[in-house]
Length: 342
Image 1 (cartoon, rainbow, N blue to C red):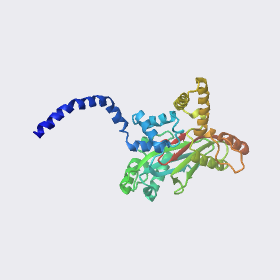
Image 2: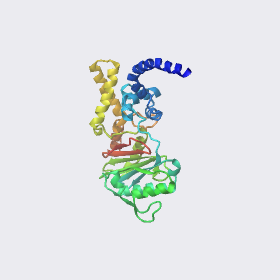
Image 3: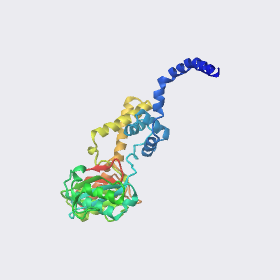
Protein backbone atom coordinates (compact mmCIF):
# COMPACT_ATOMS: atom_id res chain seq x y z
CA UNK A 1 0.00 0.00 0.00
CA UNK A 2 2.82 2.36 0.93
CA UNK A 3 4.65 1.51 -2.28
CA UNK A 4 1.56 2.40 -4.34
CA UNK A 5 1.27 5.80 -2.66
CA UNK A 6 4.96 6.58 -3.31
CA UNK A 7 4.61 5.59 -6.95
CA UNK A 8 1.56 7.84 -7.36
CA UNK A 9 3.47 10.79 -5.85
CA UNK A 10 6.33 10.26 -8.30
CA UNK A 11 3.91 10.28 -11.24
CA UNK A 12 2.36 13.54 -10.02
CA UNK A 13 5.84 15.14 -9.57
CA UNK A 14 7.11 14.12 -12.99
CA UNK A 15 5.60 17.09 -14.96
CA UNK A 16 7.07 19.52 -12.41
CA UNK A 17 10.54 18.01 -12.82
CA UNK A 18 10.21 18.18 -16.60
CA UNK A 19 9.17 21.85 -16.49
CA UNK A 20 12.10 22.70 -14.19
CA UNK A 21 14.47 20.88 -16.54
CA UNK A 22 13.07 22.86 -19.49
CA UNK A 23 13.76 26.14 -17.69
CA UNK A 24 17.23 25.16 -16.48
CA UNK A 25 18.53 23.40 -19.60
CA UNK A 26 19.13 26.52 -21.74
CA UNK A 27 21.44 27.84 -19.03
CA UNK A 28 22.99 24.61 -17.79
CA UNK A 29 25.89 24.65 -20.22
CA UNK A 30 26.67 28.28 -19.55
CA UNK A 31 26.49 27.70 -15.79
CA UNK A 32 28.77 24.70 -16.07
CA UNK A 33 31.22 26.65 -18.18
CA UNK A 34 31.14 29.60 -15.77
CA UNK A 35 32.21 27.39 -12.90
CA UNK A 36 34.60 25.09 -14.80
CA UNK A 37 37.65 27.39 -14.82
CA UNK A 38 40.41 25.59 -12.89
CA UNK A 39 41.58 27.45 -9.81
CA UNK A 40 45.19 26.81 -10.86
CA UNK A 41 44.63 28.79 -14.10
CA UNK A 42 43.05 31.66 -12.20
CA UNK A 43 45.98 31.73 -9.78
CA UNK A 44 48.50 31.66 -12.65
CA UNK A 45 46.80 34.61 -14.35
CA UNK A 46 46.68 36.52 -11.06
CA UNK A 47 50.42 35.87 -10.50
CA UNK A 48 51.19 37.09 -14.00
CA UNK A 49 49.12 40.28 -13.98
CA UNK A 50 48.50 41.16 -10.33
CA UNK A 51 44.78 41.52 -11.14
CA UNK A 52 41.98 40.67 -8.67
CA UNK A 53 41.00 36.99 -8.52
CA UNK A 54 37.42 37.42 -9.80
CA UNK A 55 38.59 39.57 -12.72
CA UNK A 56 41.07 36.83 -13.64
CA UNK A 57 38.26 34.27 -13.50
CA UNK A 58 36.02 36.40 -15.74
CA UNK A 59 38.88 36.94 -18.22
CA UNK A 60 39.56 33.21 -18.51
CA UNK A 61 35.85 32.47 -18.95
CA UNK A 62 35.58 35.10 -21.70
CA UNK A 63 38.66 33.70 -23.49
CA UNK A 64 37.87 29.98 -23.12
CA UNK A 65 40.82 29.45 -20.80
CA UNK A 66 43.46 30.89 -23.17
CA UNK A 67 46.09 32.57 -20.98
CA UNK A 68 47.49 35.02 -23.59
CA UNK A 69 44.03 36.19 -24.66
CA UNK A 70 43.01 36.55 -21.02
CA UNK A 71 45.97 38.87 -20.34
CA UNK A 72 44.96 41.02 -23.32
CA UNK A 73 41.31 40.99 -22.14
CA UNK A 74 42.36 42.32 -18.73
CA UNK A 75 44.53 45.01 -20.30
CA UNK A 76 41.73 46.14 -22.61
CA UNK A 77 39.49 46.49 -19.59
CA UNK A 78 42.22 48.51 -17.88
CA UNK A 79 42.45 45.95 -15.07
CA UNK A 80 45.99 44.72 -15.72
CA UNK A 81 48.95 47.06 -16.17
CA UNK A 82 51.42 46.74 -19.05
CA UNK A 83 51.83 43.03 -18.22
CA UNK A 84 55.19 43.58 -16.54
CA UNK A 85 54.74 40.37 -14.60
CA UNK A 86 53.95 38.25 -17.64
CA UNK A 87 56.78 35.85 -18.32
CA UNK A 88 57.51 34.71 -14.79
CA UNK A 89 57.89 30.99 -14.30
CA UNK A 90 58.75 28.74 -11.43
CA UNK A 91 61.61 27.02 -13.31
CA UNK A 92 64.97 26.99 -11.57
CA UNK A 93 68.47 26.39 -12.91
CA UNK A 94 71.40 28.52 -14.05
CA UNK A 95 72.37 31.03 -16.73
CA UNK A 96 75.98 31.00 -17.99
CA UNK A 97 77.78 33.80 -19.90
CA UNK A 98 81.07 33.41 -21.76
CA UNK A 99 83.19 35.70 -23.95
CA UNK A 100 85.71 34.88 -26.63
CA UNK A 101 89.30 35.85 -25.82
CA UNK A 102 89.12 38.82 -28.24
CA UNK A 103 85.75 39.87 -26.71
CA UNK A 104 84.25 40.16 -30.17
CA UNK A 105 81.66 37.45 -29.44
CA UNK A 106 79.76 36.20 -26.41
CA UNK A 107 77.29 33.45 -25.55
CA UNK A 108 74.44 33.19 -23.06
CA UNK A 109 72.94 29.81 -22.10
CA UNK A 110 70.09 28.75 -19.78
CA UNK A 111 69.91 25.24 -18.32
CA UNK A 112 66.82 24.55 -16.19
CA UNK A 113 66.36 22.26 -13.22
CA UNK A 114 63.41 21.74 -10.91
CA UNK A 115 65.07 23.03 -7.73
CA UNK A 116 67.74 25.44 -6.58
CA UNK A 117 69.40 22.52 -4.77
CA UNK A 118 70.32 20.92 -8.12
CA UNK A 119 71.34 24.29 -9.61
CA UNK A 120 74.01 24.56 -6.89
CA UNK A 121 75.42 21.14 -7.75
CA UNK A 122 79.03 21.49 -9.08
CA UNK A 123 78.29 18.94 -11.84
CA UNK A 124 75.30 21.01 -12.99
CA UNK A 125 77.40 24.21 -12.96
CA UNK A 126 80.14 22.55 -15.01
CA UNK A 127 77.66 21.31 -17.60
CA UNK A 128 76.03 24.71 -18.18
CA UNK A 129 79.47 26.33 -18.54
CA UNK A 130 80.65 23.62 -20.94
CA UNK A 131 77.52 24.09 -23.06
CA UNK A 132 78.09 27.85 -23.09
CA UNK A 133 81.66 27.39 -24.35
CA UNK A 134 80.34 25.25 -27.21
CA UNK A 135 77.76 27.91 -28.12
CA UNK A 136 80.58 30.42 -28.30
CA UNK A 137 82.13 28.41 -31.17
CA UNK A 138 78.97 27.80 -33.19
CA UNK A 139 77.31 30.03 -35.77
CA UNK A 140 75.27 33.06 -34.69
CA UNK A 141 71.86 32.01 -36.02
CA UNK A 142 71.87 28.36 -34.87
CA UNK A 143 68.49 27.13 -33.63
CA UNK A 144 68.30 25.42 -30.24
CA UNK A 145 67.36 21.97 -31.64
CA UNK A 146 70.31 22.04 -34.04
CA UNK A 147 72.60 23.20 -31.24
CA UNK A 148 71.61 20.24 -29.05
CA UNK A 149 73.29 17.96 -31.59
CA UNK A 150 76.66 19.66 -31.01
CA UNK A 151 79.06 17.88 -28.66
CA UNK A 152 80.70 18.63 -25.32
CA UNK A 153 84.02 17.04 -24.36
CA UNK A 154 82.37 14.98 -21.60
CA UNK A 155 79.05 14.60 -19.80
CA UNK A 156 78.01 14.04 -16.19
CA UNK A 157 78.44 10.28 -16.73
CA UNK A 158 80.59 10.19 -19.91
CA UNK A 159 84.36 10.57 -20.03
CA UNK A 160 84.40 11.05 -23.82
CA UNK A 161 82.63 13.42 -26.21
CA UNK A 162 78.85 13.28 -26.14
CA UNK A 163 76.06 15.34 -27.71
CA UNK A 164 74.63 18.18 -25.65
CA UNK A 165 71.24 16.49 -25.75
CA UNK A 166 72.72 13.27 -24.31
CA UNK A 167 74.73 15.22 -21.72
CA UNK A 168 71.50 16.84 -20.43
CA UNK A 169 69.87 13.39 -20.23
CA UNK A 170 72.86 12.18 -18.23
CA UNK A 171 72.33 15.13 -15.90
CA UNK A 172 68.73 14.01 -15.36
CA UNK A 173 69.94 10.51 -14.48
CA UNK A 174 72.59 11.93 -12.14
CA UNK A 175 70.41 14.29 -10.07
CA UNK A 176 67.00 12.65 -10.44
CA UNK A 177 65.31 15.86 -11.63
CA UNK A 178 64.03 16.98 -14.98
CA UNK A 179 66.66 19.23 -16.62
CA UNK A 180 66.19 21.12 -19.86
CA UNK A 181 68.35 23.31 -22.09
CA UNK A 182 65.93 26.14 -22.92
CA UNK A 183 68.05 28.84 -24.54
CA UNK A 184 71.49 29.19 -26.08
CA UNK A 185 72.21 32.53 -27.78
CA UNK A 186 75.14 34.45 -29.14
CA UNK A 187 76.18 38.06 -29.95
CA UNK A 188 78.98 39.28 -32.23
CA UNK A 189 80.59 42.57 -33.28
CA UNK A 190 83.11 43.29 -36.03
CA UNK A 191 84.71 46.11 -34.02
CA UNK A 192 84.28 47.13 -30.41
CA UNK A 193 83.44 44.47 -27.82
CA UNK A 194 80.86 42.34 -26.06
CA UNK A 195 80.41 43.01 -22.33
CA UNK A 196 78.90 40.43 -19.96
CA UNK A 197 77.19 40.82 -16.61
CA UNK A 198 75.91 38.17 -14.19
CA UNK A 199 73.54 39.41 -11.51
CA UNK A 200 74.16 37.83 -8.07
CA UNK A 201 76.72 35.35 -9.47
CA UNK A 202 77.00 31.78 -8.20
CA UNK A 203 80.43 31.43 -9.77
CA UNK A 204 82.64 33.37 -12.19
CA UNK A 205 80.28 33.01 -15.14
CA UNK A 206 77.01 31.60 -13.79
CA UNK A 207 73.98 32.94 -11.95
CA UNK A 208 70.22 33.36 -12.23
CA UNK A 209 70.29 36.35 -14.60
CA UNK A 210 72.79 37.10 -17.36
CA UNK A 211 73.22 39.98 -19.79
CA UNK A 212 75.38 40.51 -22.89
CA UNK A 213 75.76 43.93 -24.52
CA UNK A 214 77.26 44.44 -27.99
CA UNK A 215 79.06 47.80 -28.30
CA UNK A 216 80.20 48.64 -31.82
CA UNK A 217 82.99 51.23 -31.85
CA UNK A 218 86.58 51.87 -32.99
CA UNK A 219 87.42 52.18 -29.28
CA UNK A 220 89.24 49.34 -27.51
CA UNK A 221 87.56 46.85 -25.17
CA UNK A 222 89.34 48.45 -22.18
CA UNK A 223 87.85 51.83 -23.05
CA UNK A 224 84.35 50.47 -23.66
CA UNK A 225 83.98 48.02 -20.78
CA UNK A 226 83.26 50.49 -17.92
CA UNK A 227 80.26 51.94 -19.75
CA UNK A 228 79.29 48.52 -21.14
CA UNK A 229 79.13 47.06 -17.63
CA UNK A 230 76.92 49.93 -16.41
CA UNK A 231 74.62 49.49 -19.40
CA UNK A 232 74.41 45.73 -18.79
CA UNK A 233 73.43 46.40 -15.17
CA UNK A 234 70.73 48.78 -16.41
CA UNK A 235 69.41 46.09 -18.78
CA UNK A 236 69.36 43.54 -15.95
CA UNK A 237 67.24 45.90 -13.82
CA UNK A 238 65.03 47.56 -16.47
CA UNK A 239 64.34 44.45 -18.59
CA UNK A 240 63.94 46.08 -22.03
CA UNK A 241 62.52 43.97 -24.85
CA UNK A 242 63.82 45.89 -27.87
CA UNK A 243 66.98 47.84 -28.66
CA UNK A 244 65.41 50.72 -30.64
CA UNK A 245 61.88 51.72 -31.67
CA UNK A 246 62.67 50.55 -35.20
CA UNK A 247 63.31 47.04 -33.86
CA UNK A 248 59.71 46.59 -32.64
CA UNK A 249 57.79 44.20 -34.93
CA UNK A 250 54.76 45.76 -36.60
CA UNK A 251 52.41 43.14 -35.20
CA UNK A 252 53.52 44.06 -31.66
CA UNK A 253 52.78 47.74 -32.36
CA UNK A 254 49.34 46.86 -33.76
CA UNK A 255 48.57 44.66 -30.76
CA UNK A 256 49.39 47.45 -28.30
CA UNK A 257 47.48 49.99 -30.39
CA UNK A 258 44.39 47.77 -30.37
CA UNK A 259 44.62 47.39 -26.59
CA UNK A 260 44.92 51.15 -26.10
CA UNK A 261 42.09 51.73 -28.59
CA UNK A 262 39.83 49.37 -26.65
CA UNK A 263 40.70 51.18 -23.42
CA UNK A 264 39.83 54.49 -25.06
CA UNK A 265 36.51 53.12 -26.33
CA UNK A 266 35.65 51.99 -22.78
CA UNK A 267 36.17 55.58 -21.60
CA UNK A 268 33.56 56.87 -24.08
CA UNK A 269 35.82 59.65 -25.41
CA UNK A 270 35.52 60.94 -29.03
CA UNK A 271 37.48 59.09 -31.72
CA UNK A 272 39.98 61.93 -32.36
CA UNK A 273 40.73 62.13 -28.63
CA UNK A 274 41.19 58.36 -28.48
CA UNK A 275 43.71 58.46 -31.35
CA UNK A 276 45.75 61.13 -29.53
CA UNK A 277 45.59 58.97 -26.40
CA UNK A 278 46.93 56.02 -28.41
CA UNK A 279 49.90 58.07 -29.63
CA UNK A 280 50.70 59.18 -26.09
CA UNK A 281 50.38 55.69 -24.65
CA UNK A 282 52.54 54.20 -27.39
CA UNK A 283 55.25 56.69 -26.51
CA UNK A 284 54.98 55.71 -22.84
CA UNK A 285 55.10 52.03 -23.87
CA UNK A 286 58.30 52.72 -25.83
CA UNK A 287 59.82 54.19 -22.68
CA UNK A 288 59.05 50.95 -20.86
CA UNK A 289 60.16 48.32 -23.40
CA UNK A 290 62.76 49.99 -25.68
CA UNK A 291 66.32 50.21 -24.34
CA UNK A 292 67.26 53.49 -26.05
CA UNK A 293 64.03 55.16 -24.86
CA UNK A 294 64.32 54.06 -21.23
CA UNK A 295 65.42 56.33 -18.42
CA UNK A 296 69.00 55.39 -17.53
CA UNK A 297 69.06 53.87 -14.05
CA UNK A 298 72.79 54.11 -13.30
CA UNK A 299 73.00 57.77 -12.21
CA UNK A 300 74.60 59.63 -9.33
CA UNK A 301 72.60 61.21 -6.55
CA UNK A 302 72.72 64.75 -7.98
CA UNK A 303 72.88 63.83 -11.68
CA UNK A 304 70.09 64.77 -14.04
CA UNK A 305 68.03 61.87 -15.37
CA UNK A 306 68.64 60.99 -19.01
CA UNK A 307 67.43 58.48 -21.56
CA UNK A 308 69.79 55.67 -22.52
CA UNK A 309 70.23 57.08 -26.04
CA UNK A 310 71.37 60.42 -24.58
CA UNK A 311 73.83 58.66 -22.25
CA UNK A 312 75.30 56.74 -25.21
CA UNK A 313 75.80 60.03 -27.10
CA UNK A 314 77.38 61.63 -24.01
CA UNK A 315 79.83 58.75 -23.48
CA UNK A 316 80.73 58.82 -27.19
CA UNK A 317 81.60 62.52 -26.95
CA UNK A 318 83.62 62.05 -23.77
CA UNK A 319 85.66 59.20 -25.27
CA UNK A 320 86.08 60.96 -28.61
CA UNK A 321 84.77 58.11 -30.80
CA UNK A 322 81.28 56.95 -31.81
CA UNK A 323 79.63 54.14 -29.86
CA UNK A 324 76.65 52.15 -31.12
CA UNK A 325 74.68 49.67 -29.03
CA UNK A 326 74.35 46.97 -31.68
CA UNK A 327 72.21 44.72 -29.53
CA UNK A 328 71.80 42.92 -26.22
CA UNK A 329 70.74 39.62 -24.72
CA UNK A 330 69.07 39.26 -21.33
CA UNK A 331 68.12 35.88 -19.90
CA UNK A 332 66.57 35.44 -16.49
CA UNK A 333 66.22 31.85 -15.38
CA UNK A 334 62.63 30.69 -15.88
CA UNK A 335 61.33 33.68 -17.87
CA UNK A 336 58.67 32.77 -20.47
CA UNK A 337 59.27 35.89 -22.57
CA UNK A 338 63.03 36.37 -22.76
CA UNK A 339 64.35 39.74 -23.85
CA UNK A 340 66.41 39.60 -26.99
CA UNK A 341 67.55 42.37 -29.30
CA UNK A 342 70.25 41.70 -31.83
